Image (cartoon, rainbow, N blue to C red; front, side, top):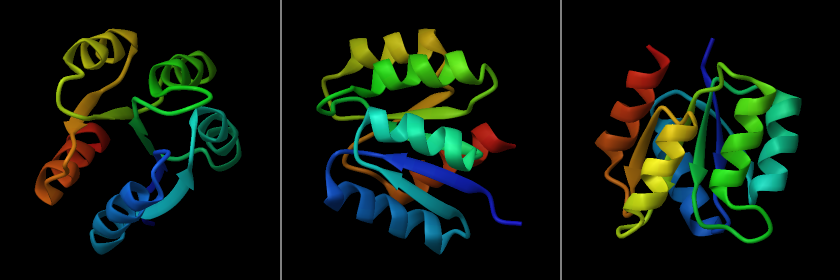
Length: 119
């Protein structure tokens, strides 16, 4: 059975890019446009992994990461960041994120990060 991945990013374009990469590699994708929706979708679909953007309106990725880890301490979350967000990446790793990938995405790096966390 294919693993499911929750992709949380406020930019529709970024979600489309990530979804395309993941589906080409056999993953099922669920989407959320902000941290609040990610929490709702996490509870509903119990994905195997979450790809979480850091900078989003309403609830950012770090806040959503904290809440997901509170709900499920075994959650697998990989953070997505733009260049120059190193301090936020370090904070998210300290809070329980398993890895991070940097935008713009390299397809191979995205799949490598996911496989490393899921295996």
